[in-house]
Every structure is written in structure tokens, then in C-alpha cells.
Length: 302
Image (cartoon, rainbow, N blue to C red):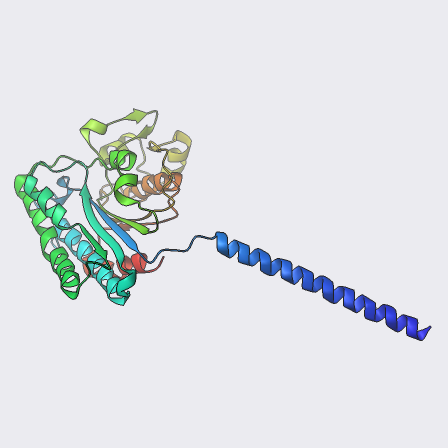
């Protein structure tokens, strides 16, 4: 009788062991399958800038004793280029496949500005990378952007910012490529307006200005409730931007409304969420020295 009990006990242990082994094997198989189906984050960077050359950059209209806003933009651009340079310096030559470029919407009428923008477009490949090219990229991005702003300011022909239409018609073609980490840096005060894209559907618009915020009575502590109940915001776009990371820098809210910054950021956040942007940050127009770490962290850490 005792031997039978022992046999039953040993058999139970064996069944239990085999059962656990089967479960463990199944678990391991599922984990491997999940890992295989999870897309790896590319070490190839595709960095784009979208510059807002509206009157926000005018030192006369929006002076700042600490540092003019266009000079802040130049500092941000330089920080991005520096982060890219550090990234390239750590890569092996055979794995080089990175890009950086700069866009506007609308395009400036000044052909010289467009010519400079073309000089800021680089594709770094294993076939063309040299120490001289890497040095050239750093020097070009540290000198040419300020020329763009100086030309725009001297022209005084501020045509506005058509960011909504850029997202509608160009962003996928210009800023997103397969097998890259696609990163878009938008330099803007947060306000969007262009006469040719002034569309309103109910309380949804293609633009946001201090005037529209005041007119929509989003200038008190009840702004979020009013915004949600009234369905205020940007007109959504049928875009899947899940393969694009976006850093918005330069938010400069109207100081007359203590809730202006919250409203502007809510417009942007809600809009980007609806386009399935997984990673984005929206930052104010701080000094470049303070923003350097923010920019580096955003780009360097996927």
C-alpha cells in the first residue's frame, strides 16, 4: 500500500513538472513571438525642421531684452545639429544612413532664403561620410540659419504660418521615411494663421491666435470645460503619424491671458494625439542654454 502511495506521489510530481515545463515553454514561445513582432527603433535618424517665419520673429514687434526670439530659434537649431553630430560620431561607417533638412510653409518669396534652406539639406551615407563632411554639417548649421532669419526680418514680408496645411499635404512626403527614426522639430510661438487656409467648421479651426482665444472665451479658469463642451480645437486630419516624433519649441503666449499657454498647448496636444503621434513635447521659448538638455534628451532617447 505504501509503495502505491509513493508511486502516485511521484507520478503527481512528474505531471506537475511536465505541466509547468509546458507552460514555461509556451510562455517563452509567446515572448519570442512578441519580440519578433515588435518593430525595432532605427538608429538611423531623419531630422526635419519646420520654421515659422511669421512676424513672431520681428525684433521690432516682439522685442525681448534677454534674447530676440529669432536668435533663440538659431540656438535651438544649433543644439539639434550638435546632437546629430554626436550621434554620427558614435556610428560605424557601414551603418551611416541619416538625414537632416529644413522646411517652411508657406515658402518664402525670397529665393535666397530657399537657396540657403537647400544648403542645409544633408543625407549622410556610408558612401559619402568623411570627417570633412561631419565638420561641414556642424559649421553650416551654426552659421546659415541666422542668415535665413536676417533675410526674413529685413524683407519684413511676414506671410504667416500655414502649419495646418503643411501637416495636411506635405508632412508624410517630406518628414517620414521607412526604416528611420523620424523626428520633426517645429519652431513656432504656438499660434497658427494663414489667410489662404483660414477654415472654420463649428468651433474647430485651422488656426489659433490670441484674438480667437479671447473671442472663444478661453481666457479664464473654466477654459478646459468650455473647450471640451464647445469642441474647440484644430480641425483634425486623417493622418497616421505614429512613425513621427515631434518637438514643438518656442511657445510664447500672450501675457494678458494667464491661461493662454494652457490653451495653446491643449490645442496642439489634442491635435497631435488625434493624429496618433506617440511621442511629442511642447516647450516654451526659453533661452537656448536652458533648452539644450531638453533637445538633446528628446532626440537622443527614443
